[in-house]
Image (cartoon, rainbow, N blue to C red; front, side, top):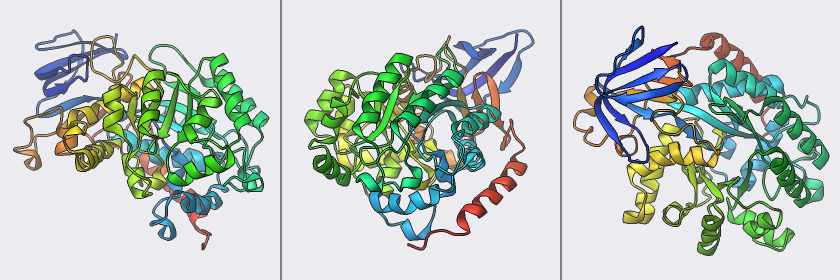
Length: 456
């Protein structure tokens, strides 16, 4: 049996139900799960990892991403745009997506995520150009496997294009039948519902202004027949709200509910413009929200009512959103931004620094329907990261390890990331790939994307 002991960690922030923070303690990992956390653990033939001067946390779980956007970020023309104008420009870029594009953009974004303590990622991929193979998400699973990342793939779609009053160009539009057929193919091929699963599939039509009601209704039926989860964008901007009122005659949440999209198997991205009454409905139905603080700020979309959601019991997880609206793939940074944003906006009603960490761990695990990840305790998956706090920068800032990532912040790659009992990042290098080779290939891919960027 493969055993690892993290020995004498300065602090272990468990995020368990008792909110334990253990000092100068050990973690025993056997195969892919945690067997024990206490002081003085010994085990024959165990690999010893020195935890002195280190804080240990549960692996971070990202509940909303767009990996394709690693190759459409920091573009000068749209740095000050809001969502609809930003999308109308980027649709032209995303018409270049193909399996190789997505493989290398995924490697770039997934690699960064792992370097900053990420262990589980959900991605919502929506760009399937008519000129490209549909086997795009397959390449995302390939990239995740090479990196050792726990990956949930959202098979998204555009079914309402410009010709029918939507935003996307017709080159990116699919039929309802095409979408459902590929969803079913991916579920049958990749979805693993078992404990410690490394790959799952989510049915995830894109947004109210890029899909029609038929695909929403049929997606909900398919997902529940296949026992997988449902995800979409909702209530992200006032433009979206006005679009729903004009096209559907309903507010976004009323439209989604009419399509069958409420319940504990559903979570929405953003959820900024829910009314207080709608937040109560989310709480009653246990419908979740992926909070994307950096993206919401960059696109000037608004501030999500996270304090009210947490008070009422809405399931809330944390997310980076796409690289193009973040512009990073670093959930560690979003923890601190979430804390500061809500302190500014809500003062004492804001979530504490530790509660922001829990949004990115146990909260995010709940949105993905996972009970086997999100905290450090016996029987859970060995998903964790360590940071080195034995540095001049952090002297005087270590009194509260549970709040540290939100209050002080850690603005560099972590010391070590472990996923499913395997060390996937250490000593500044990803362990599963030739990082230099992937970097050069990714540069070639992005050069092809950027050589003819739209001029308006």
